[in-house]
Image (cartoon, rainbow, N blue to C red; front, top):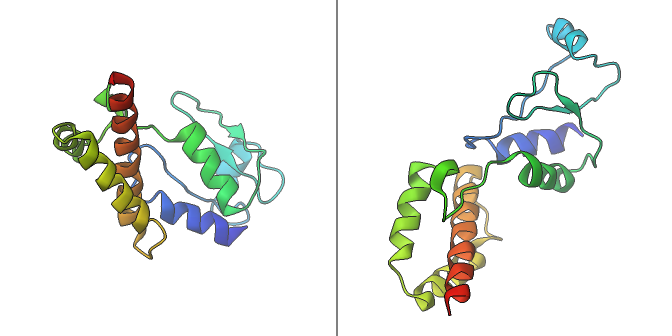
Length: 146
């Protein structure tokens, strides 16, 4: 499980809304583990805004399951119609792409989709995925207007 957890940490390393961490309950983290009633190993806890006690994660322990849970339940998403959860970089990209035609957005979407399988640093992969999400949302909005 440790390799999947480390990969998850790398995946969300640049996130402004998700922090992946770990504690060794047999060493310096013993007091923290006691506070959160960790009794078995490995135990995964997750915390959402305002939740000081944390919740026990009960899902799969492979990378894909962990990533899916984070994306669906913990990660704050940027919304093109409400920029509250968007970074400055995302806001700038949204404004730039809003000026483009539907065809230009589709072409950019196709180009980025083609890059998804390429090897790249986690930060670049995250930015690629952020742009894809923005473009998909803009494309869906344009489809609704037609």
